Length: 118
Length: 107
Figure (cartoon, each protein chain N blue to C red):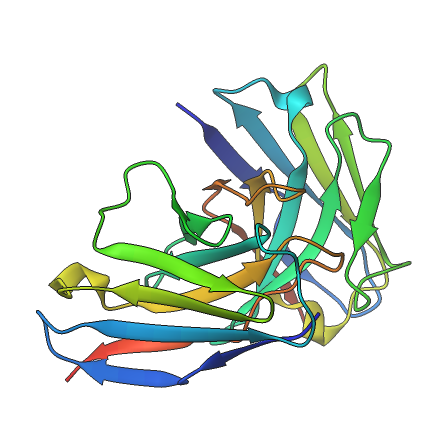
């Protein structure tokens, strides 16, 4: 059974940093690209970032480029999102998902809430 | 690629047919369009990938179609559990954008 468990969310001040993690199980992690998406309170889904299975290729939404960095550890089956220079508009539930590159993201975690506020 | 979904809200009764539209500002490729269902407080659930292929476990009352820049999700014979928000997403060209969503509500 595919399982994705996000962690690391919380309250952070504007300008601060936070690192999200996603622990994956139930599939051969290194064989799949992984996606981060987010959803601000009461709003729609926003695609954030994607990393290829080997980690060599990364892609970002314009809204987070330069500030966010996606990485993965295929030996530990973990996906990370380092978020710097956080803004109020980054407040959202952040989801990790399996796939998303040349194939739809077919399994999603339950999300972790990031709140950027002073 | 900007995805525009219509209508914003669709009010129907159980047993009716729902037709949801997703229009792209440019073609994402005929096989790079997905539909997701999201219920309040839950993660998105993949319904359709490759424009018209149902994901594992999705009932056959859900179907996807389209090509070029116009795509459609059709739900025949609405069940009570189908009332939710639906998103299209293109994964043909980064950034892999979502539409703004269509809320399907009970009339």
